[in-house]
Length: 375
Image (cartoon, rainbow, N blue to C red; front, side):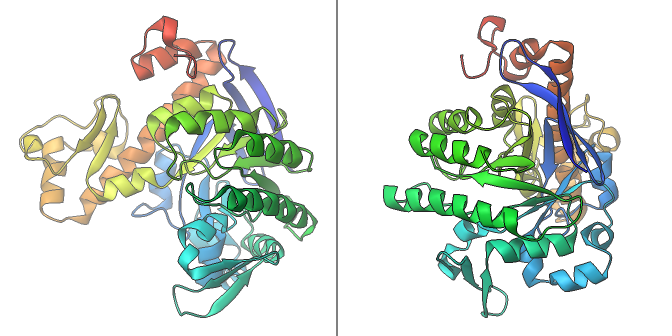
């Protein structure tokens, strides 16, 4: 049985701290969720992920549907058993692949017909199929299939994507899902504030357990992102979690939290880690740079991840210069921990009534301009 409770709200912003109960345990919000598209977070074991403090991991319905198949995962005991993760799992519906694989995809009212990037065969992913696959996977949170349009699309395409997503949301609610599985709808609308308002208002009238906000961080400018996010949040129910999809930049997480977002996900920490880039409070560091050659200090002396507590910048630099895969693993581990810790610190500040001070410290803004969205 799922439930969501708001425990505390910031007096100077819309930030809130809550708890979302799932079949595999609670998610304390706000929370950052690492992405494990193919039932694995790139380069990290479930024990690694657990050590970062991450509470929930993502899997991708489309990719797991193609390989190894929902039937095999179901026979293995479900996605939790298959990938060795005992905590909450969220499965994306495949809607983002409508955008990212659009050269292989044709969308009509039935669903999205993909030409598989694995074998070239055509597969029709409908809202009902997406829910059936997620039921077999046994995830704790299943996302309704949506149409994620490109940022630069025509107004007519944006309107149709938003309207079709709403129609598919209704079909997703009526489809089969696993007992105890929460179902989230997704609001689209691009950066059109009118469409955002209408889509969120219509979606909020549907009996979903939570609401995803999709179609942002897809190429638009940040000054367009935040009004669009606000138009969505203003029209969604306050008693269920709000999930800003695909956002993971540290400053964006703080902005999103201040505007009332409860859940985030992004491939950013592991994607950066594989290229030797690590996140710090002062910005990104490229471990491949020669200036780290002889530095014996850690990435961040305040960080408690394995990369920071056991190894120096000089050693990590050596790993990347030598092509050792351990470097990618440690950098990815640190980056996930950095984002999880940042969001956990924000949550703690909300609970103690210090969120404004936290934002000022985390962003380097003056206390008078610490309110995100007002500075």
